[in-house]
Amino acid sequence: MTVLEKLYSGTKLKQLNITQLKSLCEEIREKIITVAYKNGGHLSSNLGSVELTVAIHYVFDIPTDKLMFDVGHQSYAHKILTGRLAEFDGIRTSGGISGFPDPMESESDAFLVGHAGTSISAGLGYCRSRDHLKQDYFVIDVVGDASFFNGENLEAITSSTIKPNKFLIVLNDNGMSINKNNNGLYKLVSKVTIRKSYKRFNSFLKKTVGKTFIGRFLKSIKRSIKRSLSINSFADNLGIKYVGKFDGHDLKTLIKILTDVKNFGEPTLLHIQTVKGKGHEEAENDSSRFHGVSKELAVSKHYFSSGISDVLKRQIEKTPEIIAITAGMKDGVGLSEFASAYPDNFIDVGIQEEHAVTLAGGMAISGTKPIVFMYSTFLQRGYDQLVHDVCMQNLPVIFMIDRAGLVGADGKTHQGVFDLSYLSHLPNLTVLAPKNLVELEAMLGFAIAKNSPVAIRYPNGKINDIFEKCKDFSFEKFEILKGDLSCENAVLAVGPRALEVSNKAIELAGKNAMLINARTIKPLDSELLDLIKDKNVITVEENAKIGGFGSSVLGYYADKGYLTRVNVVGVCDEFVHVGTIDEQLVKNGITPENISKLLK
Image 1 (cartoon, rainbow, N blue to C red):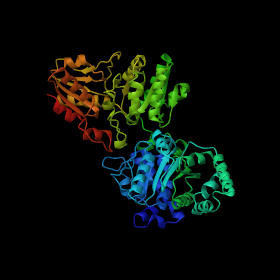
Image 2 (cartoon, rainbow, N blue to C red):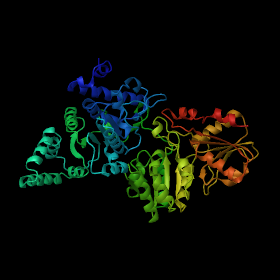
Image 3 (cartoon, helix red, strand yellow):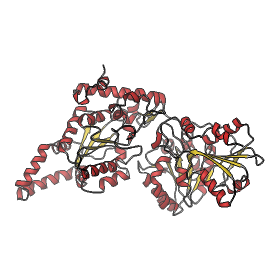
Image 4 (cartoon, rainbow, N blue to C red):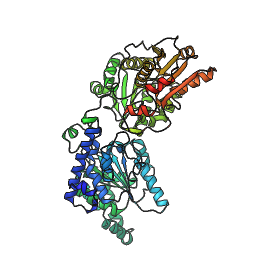
């Protein structure tokens, strides 16, 4: 019987010895690799956090103690250790468990986490409620190094110099060092200062020699040592004790340090260093490539993002002022080749979406041509900056919005189904949706020449480019792909998947209907809308029905006083859970069968 099987047959994790715990780590690692091979998922980050997760569960009492991951793509081992081994084979599949922590899925998941930067705020919130209600438990936040410096995390950790007791932040450093003082003295001081004996000795000194000459002398030595260990001093000034840096794969040391932290009880920042992709040679050597994988550990291929670098290279020859900006997603948005070819025209700000948007605003007002590349779900985080720092000043910032629409297995935290709703009502902003890469490049050229903000949104994954015709995009007009004004029906579809589904619906119904590429969400093509006002109009989009393209069309006809019949097909008023994109389309009625029923 394997160690993992023993756990599920009644053996308690705390009953295992260090040899069995190491075997458990390898079994969990093998399980993650096997399931990722079958389903795809986040591989490197989960392989790198196995020992840490096992050590936390060994020392603390989950779910009585609250464990949060920032971000949630390092929680696979946690799911396996909290009663979800049987469900783990179905992770990221329809009806299966999520690839991210979710309290609706398990009481062991303390907080829903899909975006970076939320755990320290949420953890402090837990502590505040716990202390107010006179409860007793530990709060543990596991924060990735890139995520630690997200704006919200920095706000949380600097909001007060007084931190609650029984609050532990584990900085999982798998690439970026945050200090230079990684030496023996540093570790020795860290180990000593979290022991109960140190706490008792400090208390004794305060009572005996605290205000005497000797006491002041000892304190000055202590402050001098802390100043020499810069991050220790930085953390101390924020009301939290720094401990580190330790090997995040040394299980025995991790358990010892975590036990000391638990016994110490005071707010602590524990810095550990791990290897992304640990235990899988290819993932260790290229952790970025294996961060998120498809089935059979293949690198995910996306029609639009795979062509972005080539599009930008052609544009920069005409407009050398272009500067591409992304927020920690260089590979995901397809900028790797461009960044290598034009390093001076590329900026990666890390997981700092708000900063990326306002940075672009500052660049636009001062003469360059910033283009912000970001997933739809992450641009939500820069909404205030969109409003205040770009649109209100009418600055010519271009937003290339990747993963717009349904995203499949990443589930509800990553769906890009709100951007048309949160963009369309912003003054000065033009919102576009290309049907293919040719049209995207034409739109980008249009946006570069336009002296106001422009957002271009496009989906992920494989796209069937079924429409060869692509009229020149030199002004904001729809494109008629099939049929003409003699048709009784008019289907207005946003983006390539909606167009493909709508085209199949027309063929299925055997109707002679207009198929219109609604490529300009804002402004609407009022001229064409006026021409089809007496037809049976159907709008199709991968966006929430509320506030989306269909809502804009309905609002336009209502303002004009037209009695146009409009059926809106889009994402229902609920968060879209895990599944394939095809399954999510069916769930929301974005299917040829459903649309064909709406055709007269």
